[in-house]
Image (cartoon, rainbow, N blue to C red; front, top):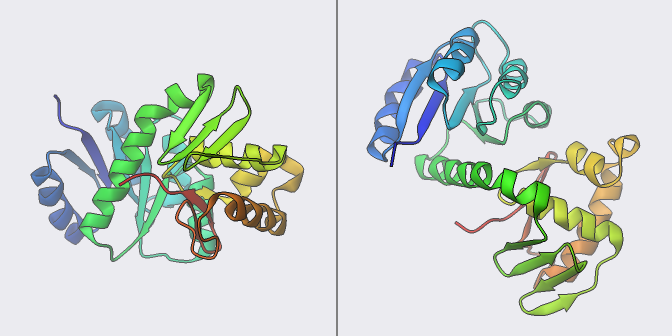
Length: 232
């Protein structure tokens, strides 16, 4: 089986020096670009399976580059950045990034995020257009029968709760911003109504979580969005 190809777009030598051997030691093929222009060129020539993207590049803002990358590749993009503000995270995710990891980070955490992103990327085309049933852990969502089964028990959801859960499970393991969830479930006119989303997330947790106050399925990224927790 050919090695999974990772493109690291980062101008910080210490990051390349640390990450390249670690990734190669885990069986990945690694290419490096130090600018946005080099990154775009590498995407076309190297055709990576996954992109690790720093936001602080010398020639272009990483958020802008994420949007440009998304026009020419479907490879998952994981942002690696010292910026930990809510605005930066939301902007990156809304412009095409699949996940956001704040520097400094643990390598094992990064590997786990990469596995989830790659698994999601491999399954997206099969799941979203034609799926009649989605199962993540012990939650089964049957789209054709309009039924949800959690830990072997049927759970009754409203139409809106069903659409919200369906969206979260379609992208299991992926962080979805408030704006994206509101747009997909309620429509463009609701993209600013984060309170509406919080209320429905609360309703959904009350119905599917064993302990809604300590959720294990629907996890919160404060100020950014939600993630349906996929298996490790």
